[in-house]
Structures are given as C-alpha cells and as structure tokens.
Length: 121
Length: 307
Image (cartoon, rainbow over all chains, first blue to last red; front, side, top):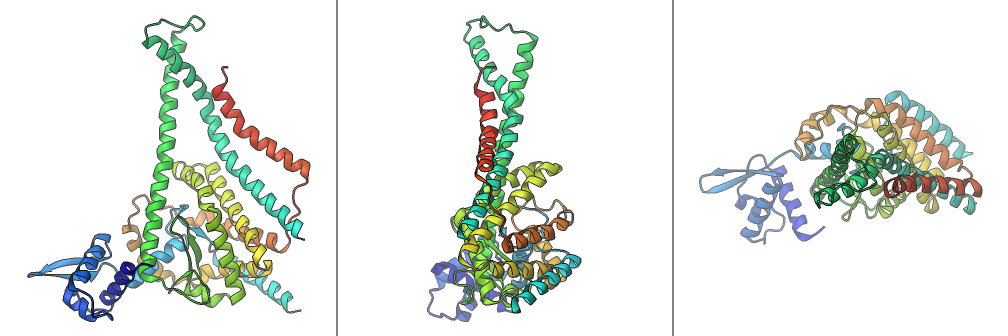
C-alpha cells in the first residue's frame, strides 16, 4: 500500500471515530501523525470526497467532512460481494467455496466429522 | 502417485479447455451460417457498388435481398456480442476497483495468512480479486474457523487462481450469462466452467499442501457460510452496496435457484481431493483433443471456405 493510501485510511479512521462532521483542521489535529501539512490533509480529504467515501458540506468559510457510510456498512458490502449474495454473479471475484443452505450445511458438518474422526485413528 | 496427480491435473485441464472451446465453438456455429453468406455478400455488394455489374456466376434478386438482410443481421449480431463482452469487462473492472478501494481503507494484514488481506467480519469467506493489482482476502471469521494448515491450503488455492488468471477463462461465460439470463445452457456452462476452474486450483494447491487439509477447509467454509453470517447486518447493508457503482446489479435475481448445486459442487471437489480420479488413457485424450480442435475448426472453415 502506498503512502497516499495509508493516509486515506488514517483519515477515514479519524472520520469514522468522530461523533460529527469535522473541519480539515480538526482532522489534522486528530491524526496520529501531527506533522502533516494542512494542504496535504485537505488534498486527501478532497480525494476521499471525489471517490465517494466522504461527504462534505459548507459551514461558513470552511468545509465540513463526514464519512459517506459507516465502517460496518463498507465491511458488509465487501462481505455481501464475497458471499455472493448481491444476486449478480460476475467473474469479478473467485470464491473459495460458495455458502450453502442450513440443511446442506448440516450434511457437510457430518461429512467433516467423519473425515476428521478418521484423521485421529 | 505424482504421475496420478499429473494425470488428474491434465484431465482437469482437458475438461476445462473442452468446456471453454465448446462454448466458443457453439457460439461460432450460430454465427458461422450467417457469416459465410456475409462474406459472399460483402463481395457481391462491392461488385455492385463498383458498377461492375453482377458477378457472372451469381444470379441476384430475391436471394440477394435475403443475403443482404442476413449480412445486416450477422453484422448486428456480431456487434452486439462484442458489445456484451465489453460491457461485461467494464462491469467486472468496476467491481474489482470498488473492492480494492474498500480493501485499501478497511483490510489489514495478518501473520497467519502472509500476503493476504483480512477483513474484520465474523462470516466465513475467502476469495481473491484477480487482475494486475490482485488481492487475496480472508474474513476474520475464516481465520478463526480454520487451523494454520488449512489456511495455508486455502492460500495455495487462491494463489493458483491468481497465477493462472482463471478469471480470464471465466469472463466470456459470465458475459454470455449476463446477456442470456434466461438461457439454461448459458447458466450450465457458466457453472461447469466455474467448477472446473475451482478443481484446477484445488489440483494446483494439492501439489504444495496435503489434500486432506484443503478438503476439510472446503467443508468447514461451506458449512459455516450460511450459519455464521449475521444475516441482518448483511441485509441492512444491501442498500449501501446497491448504491455502489454497479448499475446492472439490482436485477432482483436471488441465488436461491443455484444453491442446491452448491453442496453438490463442494462434495464433488472434496471427493476429488480425497480420491483423485485416474487420468484419461492416451487414446481418449487424443480423441478429446481432436474433437476440441474440430469444434473450433468447423465454424472457421464454414466461414472461410466457399460453400
């Protein structure tokens, strides 16, 4: 992961932790690395807004930033795609194993017990 | 033993290739009839346009009209098929880009799975995002579900996918499925090729790791997939994912119809891992290769040879 990516990630962490929208200055102050130039933080926030991960609104002369979605929503989006539950089957990802229904899962667990049981003997 | 493994690998490769070529071949056959007349009519049209009159050997009237219509239809069909493939590629690229940007913000490394990314979620999932910038992803649920040996086996399986670019094998079939959602043939072809690609990666992983570890990993992930996932949390996020840069997504098609096959596929892979099938005998392999070649050559010949 490049440095810009690391910074985007750190800034998103700050936005997710925050209770409300934040100004660039507030974000700068909350970052673990305090030595960053104001313009650098502003540029990265701007990039995040362009990518759709952050939303911004005017408040007087400053911009206020907040995350577009909660961290949990993004994690869930990743997992939805990963578990193939979005309904569109694309070749975008290659999955290790597709999930099965509960009844089938019981059968699989039984098979697993036989297999691991045989392992021990 | 090693020979048996190699033969099984060869069998897998053979089947996958046949599957791939069959799809392409039948597509070509559909096309072939029209394209042969297309070529003939293109020649005729050039003759006419050049003011050279009709070619001596070809009377043209109603037949020529039909042929010109076929020419148009063939061209349109060809263009549509190209468009479908391009649209599918674009959709896949968008989805992968979205995955990678989200992973960049959310995922972290873990010493249990060197080189892979981990997403903090209790459901069991392991997958790879293929491409020039690729990634292997595990959920935290998978890390706690599988032991170290099983994780290594899954990692070997996913690396095999990435190295062999299996996604490129699958892409034409998913493109066809997108275009012909109602077609059982397209659905079957897609599923079969997907299964064969998984088996190929299984075979490859088995060269580095014991087969049993991969088999138990498969069963554990398959069994946990439905049970562990907090369905409520996932459903709540469905809206978020539908907003996310994938316009063709919300077709409302549920994977339910495809689900009964999921456990059968898992079972097939597990049985194959534990009892590798003997490879094809040489004459059969030659026959398969010949039929495969014939499937490709026939439509091409129909197109090029004057009939």
